[in-house]
Each structure stands twice: as structure tokens, then as C-alpha cells.
Length: 171
Image (tube, rainbow, N blue to C red; front, side):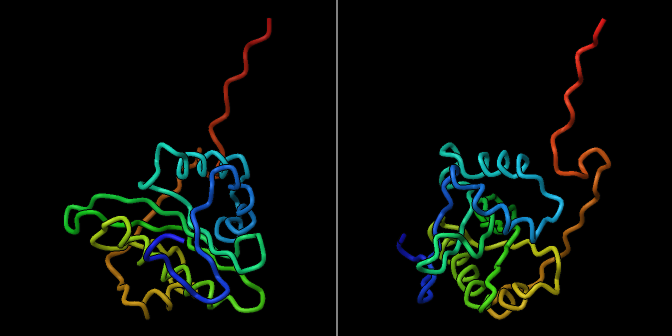
């Protein structure tokens, strides 16, 4: 486990290797119901590929001894005019049928640990639903509401799939 990594007994946070991106697809479907597997795999390959090491990735939480992740967030290191280097985290998901609160706590702790390892001056966390349980944990950990995120869906990308390729004309 990297120095400064979050530690909650029975839970382990680690970067998701690109070849295991399919294992977290069910978790992401909870956050993004319309997400298609091919779109997720393309996105994950770009976010966690070796060329992006130290700049972006997918952090997962596993409950020992279970091999499947029970939580995750997608992250990237970004430059902010006001704060310098910042850790941007999106799509925080924690699913554990018995007790999701420690999984959520592990994600929140790992955000801070990762920001320190990356030398970031702040953390910007994108929470789509303000009533999500993770929002309360982030506020309790010192995160504050800062502005508002807005989004406008465009008709041609609603299904999270790439644009259709034109078919060759038959004569």
C-alpha cells in the first residue's frame, strides 16, 4: 500500500489496473444506469493507461478477503487558476449490502491521501446527487460546497456510446 494511503481495518484502497476495468462495471451502472460496457472500457483504458500514470486513474476499495471492489472513484490531477494542482474526483460509488459507511469513509480518506501523494493543493469532488450518502461524509471531512456544476446533455451522446460509423453504400 502506498505511503499515506487510507487505512480502515478490513478495507484496502488501490489503483484499478486497466485490464480489470470490467470488474467494476456493475458498480458504475449504479451511478450511471445508461452506461454501456464498451463505452466504459474505452473510458477506463484512457483514464488508467500507463501513459496517464500519476495524472488520472480509477481508485477502488476492496473488503478483505473479497476480490471484487465495493467502492470506487475516478480521478485526475488538474491545474486550477486559483488553487494550483488539484485532485478532481468523480463518480464516487460505495456499495456494500452489510455496511456501506466504512467503504464510503475509505473513499473519503483515500481522496486526501491521494491528493497529498500527488502534491495537490485541494480536492474538487463532483457529486451529482447532493443527497447521496457520500456528500455527508465529504462535508464531515472538511469539504465544502463550492459553486455549482451544470450540465447540458446533447442529443447525439445520450446513450453513452460512440457515434455510429457510416455504412458503406451498396451498388
